[in-house]
Image (tube, rainbow, N blue to C red; front, side, top):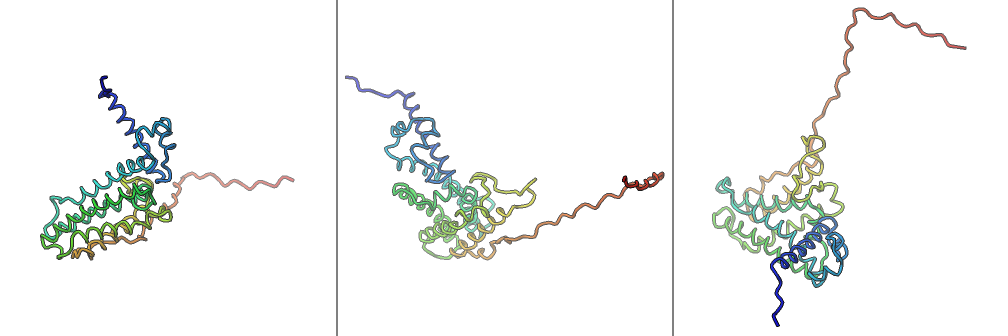
Length: 276
């Protein structure tokens, strides 16, 4: 008997269906957290039967892990890219600049996509998802650790345990975002643009920052100042924390127009008598 072999086209179709299910779970996760992701909701969004989901995932936990990894990979890669050296970084400030970009990327993306960030960082999760979460925390720590190690080697940062310092940085950033990512923090630090939105601009033409813009900048700068100080960077005191209540430009009301002079004015209209 000839063993059954799946064709390339069939394998591609199966992979496409699996990808569609993970994409559907990711969308639900970004919009409503892990509580919004169920076998039923994913099947409905992907346009398949509930039973067919189990053809690709043995249980809900496996589906949640796949959705978590899809989202977490994007965020991790963004921070890893921010940690890399840049040609314009001045000598003596390279590690601080790299750390600054990484903290800014991590925190600002989290506050632009508050619901997704809260799910990735804070939400109670299945043990399988929690194991994946720890894996990504270690990857973040490795990215920060490379910055700290380079800073020590160049003399920019004092001698220290780079691995321990990096793990502490990851913990500090995540814990510092607990408040801004909470429901009470939604109105002041999240504009709903999502992690890949520009996150800037006020009403109208965007010429003046909104309260959410100012609060986001303040949170990011405060976290950065603490992180730079924690690793012993001399630039910690230079990290600017924006005023949470900046003075806004006052726009004066236009003066009333002066009526044009009429060289031949009409005579005044006499008051009409009251009709009995």
